[in-house]
Every structure is written in C-alpha cells, then in structure tokens.
Image (cartoon, rainbow, N blue to C red; front, side, top):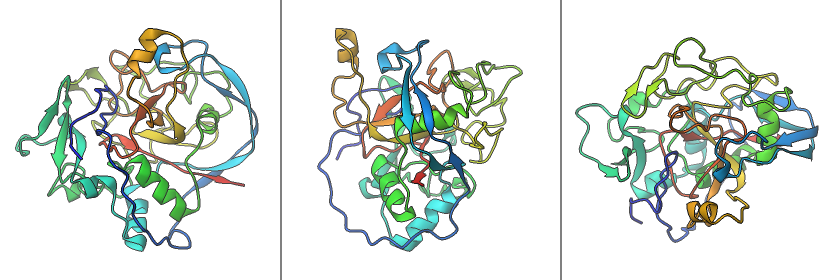
Length: 313
C-alpha cells in the first residue's frame, strides 16, 4: 500500500487500490451507551435536483422514490462512541493498519513534521501515524475531542462499526430524505437561504479564501461538536457541513458524456459520500447542498470524513 493518491480529488483524496485484507473481528452484542436517535417518516421522498451546480457529479435529475420509515442517529458518530467500539472489539482501523491518513494542512501546527503534499491538491498531506485517536498524527491526542465527529475512518471502518452497533449506513435516498427534514425540494436542511461569509452561518463550512484563509466566522476552523448549530425539521444535526457522511452504496454517475466519463475514470469501487464538510465553500467545493455527492475508495480516510447510522424499524 502506498500513500499516494490514485486520482486527485478536491474533496476527498484517496489511496491507490490495494489488496483486500481479511480481518477476523469479534463483535459485541451491541454498543454501550447508544446514541440519540429519531424516527424518520416513510412515504414519498425526493432525491437529486433539477437545479444542479455540479452536474458532472450526477446531481440531476430530481426524482421521486418511496421509502419505508426508519430510525436515524441525530448526529454523526462521535469520538467517544467510536472509542467504545474500539475498546469492546479491539478493532484496528484502516488508517492504523496502513500507518497514515490524509490531513488538511491548515489543521497542522507550524512545527509539525514534514509530510508529503499531494499534487495538484497540496492542501492535503499524508501524515504518518494520523488516525481517529491521533487526528493530526503522533502526540495529537488532545485534538480527539469526545463530542466531535470521529474522523480518519474509512468506509470499511464505518461498516464494521455499523455491524457492532446493530445499524447500517443509509442509502442515498434515505440520507437525502432525512436531510430535507420534511421541507421538500430544498437545497439545504434549513431551506434555500445561502450561507454567507458575513452574517449567516447555519452550518460549519469555510469562510474566506480557500485554502489559505479560513476566517472561522461560524465559530470553527475544523470540526464542530456533532450536536451543534440548529437541527433540521426531523431533529438531525449537521446534515451538511462539518464532516462528509458515508452512504451504503457505490459512487456511480450515469452519463453518456465523454467529459463525465473521463472525470470519473478509475473510480470503480468508490463509495458514496454526502453532505460536504468544514472545508467546503461555494467558490471551491460547493458540495454542502443536499443533492451534492462525492466518491472515495473504501479504505481511504481523511480529517473531514465521518458517518452516521440508520436502523430498521
């Protein structure tokens, strides 16, 4: 396994394809502590948009779907909750097994050891020893805050946690239905009002000039607590911004356009991510909209990728 990326991606750098490693894990009969959860009504749901911004990502069209009711975590999985899983199972994450993870350079202290920059996205650094418990690398235990989203977890790690916790990752349709909070065809969980750099901060995204000047006017320059800002109509927090959230299915874009096919060449087996992160900005990565999407390899991990679970009723 090398730490270099297979294909540059502004949102989520990915590891090169690797051989699947089989790991035998003994799972507990459930998680200690649990989490806050809410019931999401079933019925008619919406997915996608007829107002695509990044059509190349497969945002369009808007279509209707039928969904069964389900239960969803009100927040992404926190460091505290993930730590319970580690203690109970002895699980080793992909980042720990592979020895490194991708860290946004703006989070690193000035005296951080030299790390590999990724061209043409040098704001991503390959940091040896970075993991969920050491988010900036060795010696960064203090930055693993109990109430913040767990990060540096891969899709594989999220699936392992879900099996232990008795839940699963949501489908894209379930995630979008929940994010809309009963509002219908809206861009954001709170409606259509656009976040600004000056006076409207409904979520944790970038303010300023990316990637060198984060004004932090929403109160955060990295992750925010998982239960922060205002919840949507279903009582869900941070459905956009803060950290990307894994969906259960592969990242696929159906298009006959050669430009679209070229843009996603080499992404076979990538997994779908929704919601954007604290690194998103309209001028750079306008993916903190409900219909926005991205993809990453199943063993990749970064400082802005997390997940939440759903549960069948």
